[in-house]
Length: 142
Image 1 (cartoon, one colour):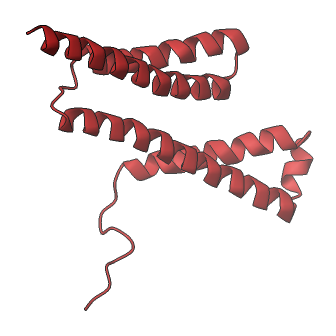
Image 2 (cartoon, one colour; image 1 turned 30 degrees about the horizontal axis):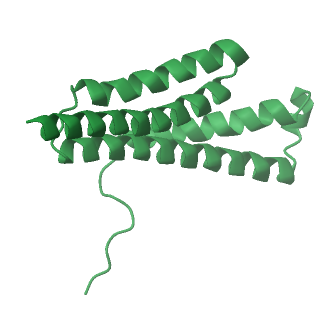
């Protein structure tokens, strides 16, 4: 029995998003940890290791966030919904509104992304409860 190949045979554009997240994570670490260009050029092994971990953490956060959003969309479609339904789109609108409000309040993209994700998550719960209650009352009155 042959072992499955650990790497895919084809290149996917998705990988470029991973590379971009890694570069942003490394760049963010370097920007926050050093005071001058000389510190960056010294190539301290600890600084390089921490920047690499920061980049990998950025890739992990990207994968978890996109995976959760994609999983939500797929499960909604598997439950019989369409991706153009108002309850489905409302959760993304709620998440976007939360991100915008957080960015206006803090001027931090990281805080806005964090707030947008959690606003989306709790918005999905709220929309799900409202839709469930509305459907239940509709079925009970029919």
